[in-house]
Image (tube, rainbow, N blue to C red; front, side, top):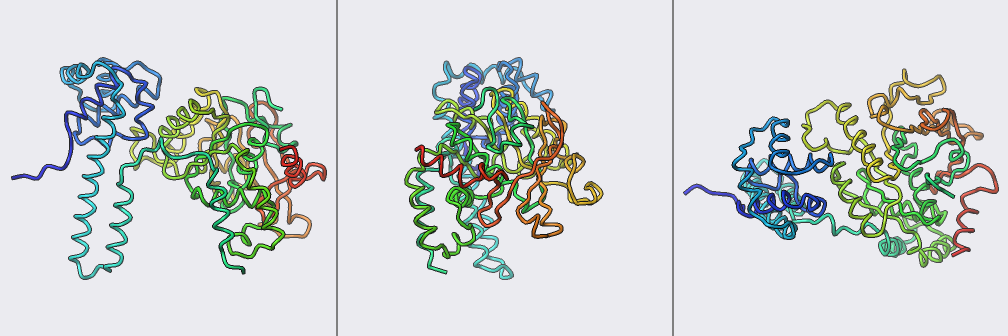
Length: 447
């Protein structure tokens, strides 16, 4: 008797039928299943076609799905599509069916993981601890997860993470949203419906800069949502704590904070529910980001979306992972620009720069050519971070950061100077009356 992996063919058909009847249900089930969740290849192809149509805002019916499948290189059978489309009278049970389909996929994946574990355990050349650790990690990953139930708000995690840190042994916007950096806001606006790319070499401060912007947005009553693909949610929250409290990040995570720093941070964290910041980590495709943002907008609104970082985004639906990187980058940037326009919000994307010195000036400053293979043509604004101290350290440039405006949809290119504090990983306005700590104290005092 041949072994048949766990699956439910009728439920897969019922789910697809629900999407034919009510395509809007796709946004509700996209966080539960993907095309790979279906066991039957034909059903995978149909789901992939429906996903493409929904993403493009096109109608979903037997004719359009058949046409889309043909465009994707599949061979649709019209009678099969018609039969599936007529199974369900409504789309109300789509989430229920999606849960069953995802559960069957998890069972198949668990069986495959356990089979590989048995093969590894039989191989005396394999380290048994490595075999066990691998299967444990794989089994954790195949657990049925509903991404819609992930909590975006960072509170109460802020307090939980801060409490954990304390246990370490002693050792004015209309159509745009201001960044909080006044000179930068005068030159570049994060206008609704635009894509802004912030590029820098590793460890220069891409994530630190967007966290400063995110915190400012929260202070003025906006709700930013960050998808962090490169760092964990916990690490992001640690950085937010360090910036907001003005304390050294390294001292914080190594248990070397002074009593004054601890007291300062504790007094702030008690009021942190006022910071309406959303942070989601893990692996997210642009399509999944879109569906999650739509959900978040329905729940409580989203004023700006941040994605960190471009290089970690998987290929869009329908594009093979073997596709050339620059084509994947361009496709993802175009999709994010479309997202900004569709949802009428600014999208801010970070990207690594090409380290080729031929693409820098004599002082090591990057330019637009550094981003030539990272979706520049689909962006409205491109900001490049340069810190001279990392190239030629001097006393004078230790706290200097240059924001090079390489592309500006609504203004000129140029350079804006900011201050940078390494220990707290904080960018600030260089003018004394605009310093980060004074902004911070004034904001919390108003609360």
